[in-house]
Image (cartoon, rainbow, N blue to C red; front, side, top):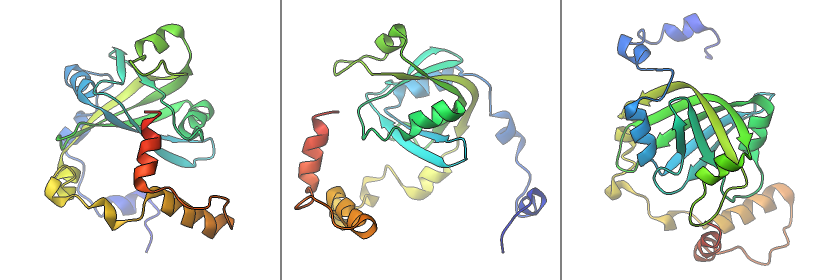
Length: 207
């Protein structure tokens, strides 16, 4: 059976606790600022004008996302695969959701709001590091800030090294892409897929 109405959905759950409702705030407070400053990893959630969704990871040194003030974040764009899914979605809708993570922390931080793509020299300079000055910066006007509890990470044991899966349990990224492209697009031109070591070596050249 499918749940198709809000009343039917709510019948399955207790009402949200008052604390869960009140912990959503409209701007970055001291704790959110510190969390972002410690975070080397954020997931960007966006959609195009037709509602097609995308979630994309971004990473850098801790604090690579810059805070201008309690209502403004700057997220530098680093070299990737040039699909530009997130950036095209921002152009289409002007909206962005983010989820910040800190290694070892079971809590996460959600920050949502309106977004634009900035090439303002001042924004680019603030996001420059020893490797590069970004081609553009995502400028996020904060509307909603929300600290997520630890339950999901506690259930998954994500940071628990004893529960980590050995990388050899799956083929290399290159091998998986080869198989997928052959299955859905026919024969590919590459004579052989990259090994995991070759792929990582190539990635390190553009980190």
